[in-house]
Image (tube, rainbow, N blue to C red; front, side, top):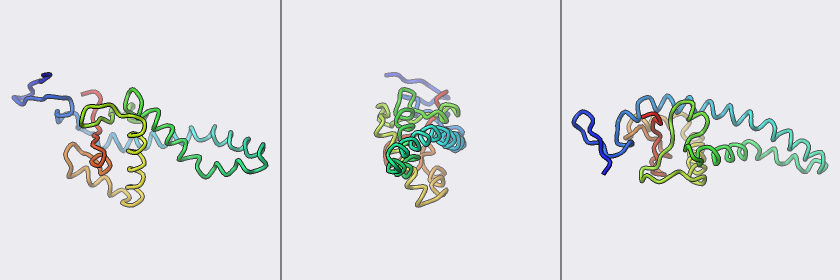
Length: 156
């Protein structure tokens, strides 16, 4: 058993340590803003590619503009959050990562479902989705509760 003792309390895993959640809410918000900026920048070269494709297909390719931003965001999430670091670039800059409570790794599909549930809950509940973090254990949001995930500090 890999257990540590902190102030007389036995901590069996990194996710049981309360220090792993210090400042997570603020870091999540800042990571979200950074990731939106990165997705916006990544959309530019794909938009140019769609423009050229639209010219080559006499305008038919321009229909791809309707799914361009969600497609770029999903590819970004799949490759970063579902990757080796289990964190998007914004999350890595803020020192947080996404973990599963059962200890298994986050795969690409879980990462995409996590983000889609976040977007859907944000559309329905607007910023009120963050209120759940005030009352839940480990500062988990609604989509974290549904998927059995938690965002924690990667440096602790």
